[in-house]
Image 1 (cartoon, rainbow, N blue to C red):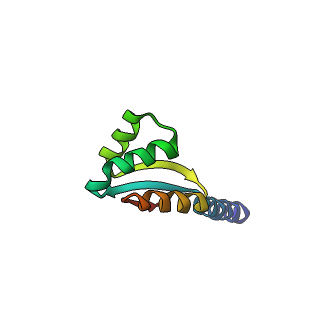
Image 2: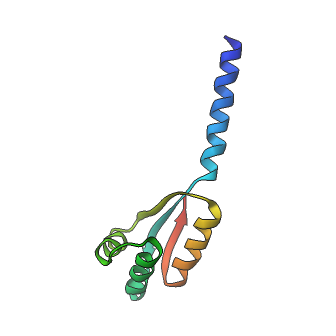
Length: 90
């Protein structure tokens, strides 16, 4: 019984470590003056059609991309913030 408990704890710890490796990118807001630039950038970065990109931006806060590495999330965040978006990594 004690061995089972230890195995369960170890599995839970591994799951927590795994969760920290994957991040989501969430668009929280954008500068009204930059809305068109943000839509264009979202469209280009995520290979979306104009309608899909516009819906994502209009419905902020919205998760733009899930389960990515931190480096990729940071790069996308920088790119989007440069055009006037407010983005957070979750």
